[in-house]
Length: 79
Image (cartoon, rainbow, N blue to C red; front, side):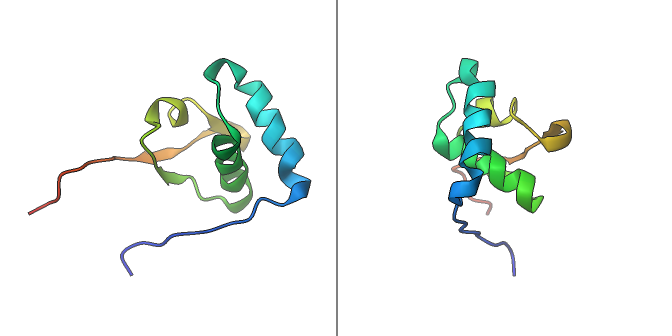
């Protein structure tokens, strides 16, 4: 298998953590989806992310002051 895609439900119990991330990074104007990805990374340990929003995800920190591993976004296919 070359890669995987995870689909996760953000439980209501996690909304407090999501809100805390939104408040903490209010200067970056992150939204629910960004904060939910932070929650998912903190709870699952999965920090690799493919996003066009690399400006924010290079700044955001997860529990333990860990960074996301932002995968390169490219529109060119390898030949």
